Image 1 (cartoon, rainbow, N blue to C red):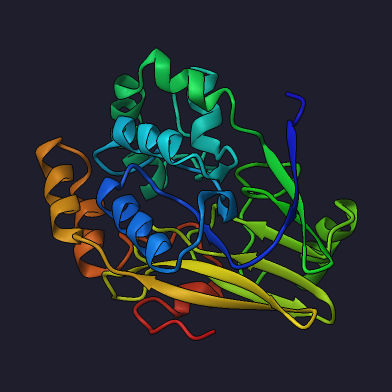
Image 2: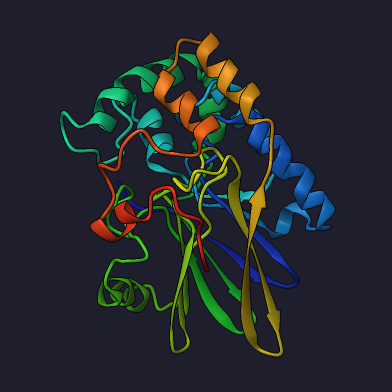
Length: 275
């Protein structure tokens, strides 16, 4: 499939970045209120994909994103919904715990999504490019060549830099891995805002988003905790017979497993995130 790249020009002022709504309507509504509190307009808000996933409200989240009219790219789940695929395409190992759980939540999401939501999803680009504070920025989901590729803080800089070079970019904003981090090397930045739909495996119920600002030519990134009605989101998942372990994650702040994580990130489970 040829990748669609959307160029959105120059952005000025604070930019709010988030990822992984994961069908968590309660978190998305809380983020909307946070953006209003920060006085950031929809034109300066960017989502790194996966509007749909584990939680109970895929249709409502797609409709909310469409009405809010923020910038977003397609995650692997959106692309697989378009392809009418039988799995989420998350790049989980066959037979792993995540793979088995996806066979529970993905069919639910696929059955819920209707043609008018698919019509909206077809308009979502694969990548976004823009200029900010004199820097060239590219927004991707996993990696450029693999929407489901995992890039973590511990991923060698050479791998990140190769993508930065291939995209002729100073900053890559990525999603998919579920953990917030920033990796700076000289004048290059790899940023993952984290996700709002699930905790960051840090034993906290809050999720994460970021705000980017430019001061005197310097790019500043701040990570923000998103507090929302996590118990209501978990109860909705249980009501819909979605995986109990993911509902419990919303309450405990701990992932059901660390199958996708490198050793460094696995060792940080349950620890407070430091930036």
